[in-house]
Image 1: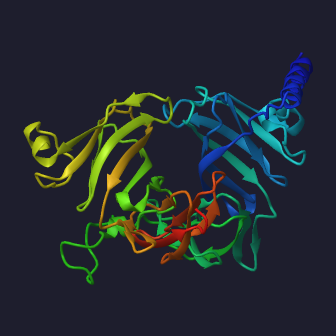
Image 2: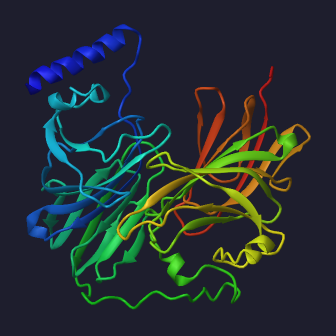
Image 3: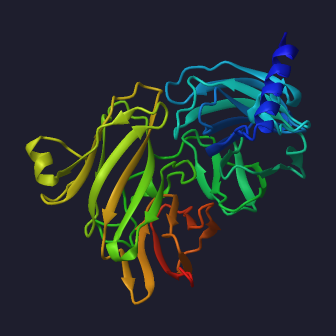
Length: 420
């Protein structure tokens, strides 16, 4: 019966191609992986994999099991509700029965996850996959040390050493962060294409007692009331999942639209407050839940209006300061909600035309940021390193990834393409 159903799906996919309709491919975003190295003689490591399915209408997500690795102890959860999801391990041939997976690789098996709900149009299906891999080629002992040698294609990662092991070398620039139980971890963001060729070595000699709690103390180099706290400086940057995309309008308008994605997991939270920075004004706010497509109320209030309504945005704001307020249903413990918030800003100091040059000058606090130039403009200067690509409609997009827990000063200049 399964073979008949699979053949029917394949025939439908072929009919769509013949009719000129391209079957949608599986797409995904926001991948993050945490590897916990188990006892060295086990050659095994536990994986916590967070991934977002983004193919509109998809009912399933397929997670490949890397060739050479033996998977066990799998479990899958819906990130929005925290509830377990149904899944099965299938072969590549079985995966290809789904038109989304027409290119499934014969060298791999796949974890086929039944999503909690079909992926909404312009929305997401967030899942968490837990599994244990045994792979003696990736994790082994050598000369009194343990070695984790594994190219990582996921762009945000953390690797946690076994208890009692100290890090002796790591070839990929990484944060080193002690865990609450005393284990040592490395964490990094890999912005470029291809895999990060991670090789790390560790040996016994680390304490197994928990560290002291992080504090709100600030660096001695910063003024007492400024600069980040110790807690924020030693937070894991790769785990932070806020990102933002700016779409620049014509520079004479000083205006740009944007959307930013934000995940809330605090059961006490019931609204999002976006305090508009000085020198900018905001208009046309909107928001929806990426997990379900539910539209949310979004309104602009001033600091004085918030005070009158006895609303506390969590920070001190001036009476004339604008604040975008987005109420939402509080999440349950162990659950989360991911919002997409869209706004239009007018900021003459940040975005302007100087002679024949477009100038965009703004600081970015999030780990992942992107700027899309107006149609017909090409980049001439970028003070901060960026990945640059041309979108299908011809516009230029610059992506800025900042793997440090600080702000990135972005200065972009652009000029008109000749003939436009």
